[in-house]
Image (cartoon, rainbow, N blue to C red; front, side, top):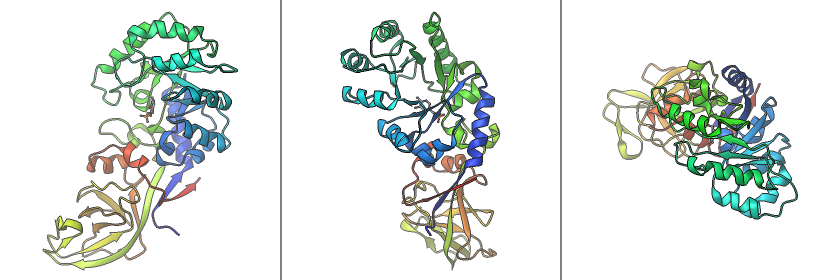
Length: 358
Ligand SMILES: *Cc1c(COP(=O)(O)O)cnc(C)c1O
């Protein structure tokens, strides 16, 4: 049995999907499954999301893995296709594509496809990453409408830069740009990621694109999933593999960065950056041992971390350690490590065993 385990609660996933519906009752749901379903396991998560109206991924390989796994729902490619040679693959597999660049329009106009693709025209309303500029939108829309390889039901989308911050006016500005551009169109719209689903109900549109919130984690600044009635899907856990008394003044771990202020018992935990635990988590980052929070001390190594259990501990070798999960929000660990929960979840490595529970 492998020590480091990601326990995935399918009941929590069901619950969070219901929460998405409660937040956006009038919208269809495009469940975002990129990056191995945010580290939760692509096909297993997709199979459980039987009520989703479509799936969304970032790469064609991810979409093909869903089809290979037996999933038949529409799949939206959030970055679209990358080369003209991709187009027959999209058509053959019922992949829908985002169109965010003139080069993609050119490829569609010049291709030789035996059928029509469903497309989502992405407008850059202010994020300035992917998307057709507002000035170019009308022309791009017209080109797409006239393309014989494109389903006339062109869908319209945009993406928000600052939706996680409710005090930031940029979301309203982006929404206003989008609404004005599409005012005379009857086409379906899609704007909201998790943060906008939770924080900006005006943005919901015909479709929403939840990622992080489905996994029970908050996209909002300084919040955790429970603040929105979400249940964390992943519990990352392992075991204690050693305990030892270390004397006051002795240093622990690589670089000797942490020194015992008093005599204590140091626990060694079978989890390190080789499993995806963040190497930059500093001394003091919380870890749960036998249901009690203790501080990580010293540097995170590849296979292990060390924790300060205190002299009074009753912990023993083999006891359970939880790195994050319902008892210890991944948002908290991410903040300690100066990153975001998205990164911690995606970074789980193949060495970790996945265990799906009801
Ligand atoms: C990843 C992604 C999402 C999902 O974002 P969350 O913050 O995880 O909900 C939505 N839309 C696009 C374009 C994305 O790339």
